[in-house]
Image 1 (cartoon, rainbow, N blue to C red):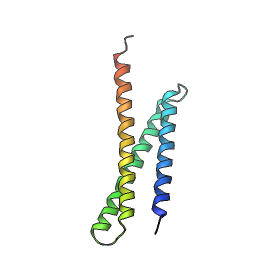
Image 2: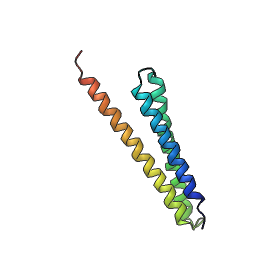
Image 3: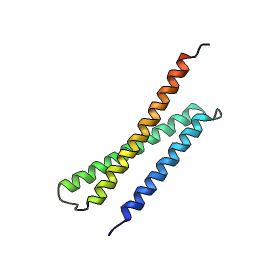
Image 4: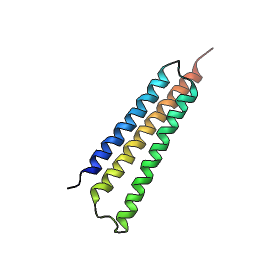
Amino acid sequence: MDVSGISQATAAETAFLNAQKQFEIAAQENTEDFETVFQSALGMVEETNDLHNSAESAMIQFAMGQSENTHDLLVAQSKANISLQYTVAVKDKLLEVYREIMQMQI
């Protein structure tokens, strides 16, 4: 049984969680400038897009009969789904913060 896909999924999730933590820390610290926070968010979006593309290619390979391993397909789809959920959660939090800032009275 090939379990290399599992270790790759764990490594991808760890890298994504680290990127999310860096984004949250940068958003909370006043010493970081907006560009750093924005670049971190863009990195999360790009990683989400890459994971979605790899899941899509795994799905196409499975559909064409080039791959018979359903485990790799499920791992790729799960990574893409988790990544998308994290990205949407960060986007929602950013919108919430923006709305709160816009409602502040000066």
